[in-house]
Amino acid sequence: MGSGLTFGAWQMLPGSNQARTIARCGFDWVLVDTEHGNIDDSAMHEAVAAIAACGVSPVVRIAANEGWMVKRALDSGGTQSTKTEHNCCVKAFLLTRAAAHGIIVPLLYTADDAKKLVQSAKFPPAGTRGFGSPFPMEKFGGPSPTEYLQQANDSLVTIVQIETKEALENVDAIAKVPGIDVLFVGPFDLGNSIGHSIVDGTIHDELKEAIAKIQRAAKENEKSSGIYSTSGDQAREFADQGFNMVSLVDSHFQLMLQEYVMDEQQMREPDIADILTLHPGVSDDGCGCAAGVYDFCINRCQRFLCSFSTEYGQGSNVRACKDDRVTGTIALLD
Image (cartoon, rainbow, N blue to C red; front, side, top):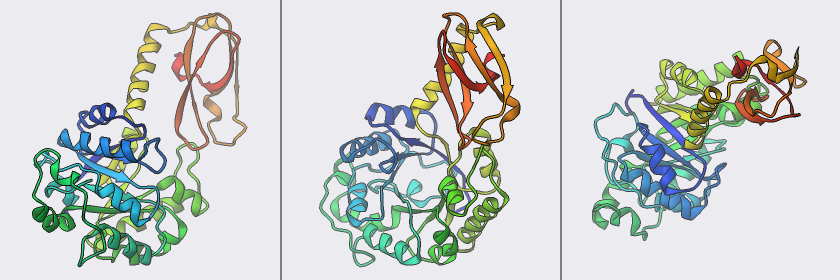
């Protein structure tokens, strides 16, 4: 493992066109999310091939640490990434001819869980993965079966998510497992698990220390570290802290939505006459955004978008029309 930095995106929705669009945004890797995303087995196969064809590394997040899920992800048929000169920490991004260039597995708890994953991900004698899928070899003029068997174990990156209190307690032992390449922090689930949920974007000091502990375990065992971020500013902060894999956005849909919101603001910028009532207040969920929370009602038919923060600190947008009442920040009305 090296010390390079890579940025990636999450693909939550199915479609090879969406996969290609995300991949062409300049990311080093795109994660195809079959755990929380609306992506089934068939859509996963299509997305992996589409991403790899753009010269970007596909990574598949499976739903659980099950051998058959690992097999399906690794047999998905993406071949060699053509992006070979960026400063990348993950060996599968630089080496050639893996299937999915990486898999990320959620909710591991112990070193035995990590060993089980490695067994599922590696061909014998290192593991028990079965050989049979033609897709990793036939897409885009890939290697011969013999070449693939010789290269796959070394070129695949195996990523484990550290997102529970038990995994945090066992992180040093997990990091020592041969065949585990990256420790990836799931900050929201980890915060929930240790009793310090991320509220209004605020990361508690104990959660910060937990994240630092994971990063230290990775570094001490010559593994890479990764983390999920919710904004460009946060991604840069994590990058400055030395993380090797940092996510930037959840999907191209969010990129398009953000751009649309800005365009909509410019086209439909309301004036104060559109606001019937405007009362500062405090949100009931205790998320701490009192100064920026307002209750307002639309007086005229003109539509506009307002933004509000969820209790998890993630921004959302709603469309307001005449007679709608909304609680949200006034930022988009300025």
